[in-house]
Image 1 (cartoon, rainbow, N blue to C red):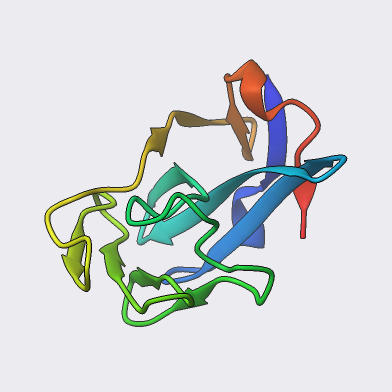
Image 2 (image 1 turned 180 degrees about the vertical axis):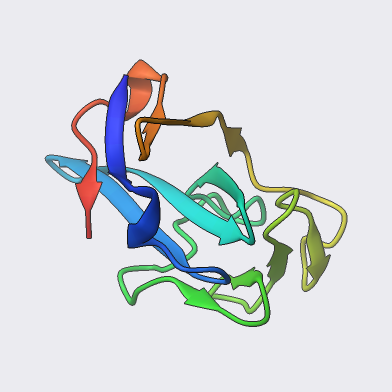
Length: 116
C-alpha cells in the first residue's frame, strides 16, 4: 500500500499531483475529489503521453482536469476527454482506497511517489 494523503487534505473539486522522479523519468498520479468520491489517474495525456501539468502544476475547472499543453478537458468522474484533440480517449485510472482516513493505492509502479 502506498499512502498518498489524508482524505481531508484534498477538497471537493480539487486535484493533487503525486510524483516520483527517477533520473529524467517522471512517474505521476493525479488524485481528484468529486464530493465523497476519490479517483486517481496516471499523469499522462492520451494525446501525446506527456504529463498533464508539463511541470506547471495541475489545472482544474469545475471538476475537470485540463492538459496545460493542448487544453484537453477530462472529467473527474471517469477520466474521459470531453473536449480537445483527444476527445473520446480517457486517462488511465489507478485504483485508490480509503483506509483509516488516508487515501492509499496498491500499485507498485507508484512506489515512492510524493506530493508535488
